Image 1 (cartoon, rainbow, N blue to C red):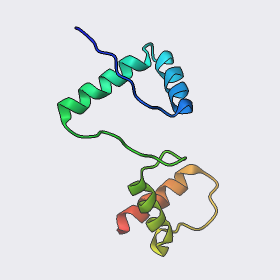
Image 2: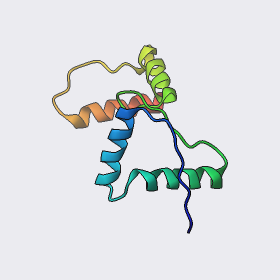
Image 3: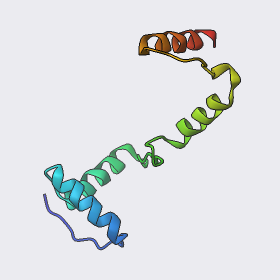
Length: 96
């Protein structure tokens, strides 16, 4: 398939990190960009999920914060094993 050269402006640090990651995946940055653009053309939408430092989406972070502030979501007590904690968490889920 014929190709064409394109010039784009990139953040140098992001470019360097993307090159390292793509190399570890056995490809190169040009292939990654081509694959992304092919997906973009096929789906006709941006398929980008932004995540925070912990790996959560904005929606998940908001839900966690909401749940954390709700006193009905609090599990108190000391646990000597994971099974007891999991049992209490399961009971908490069922109350909702």
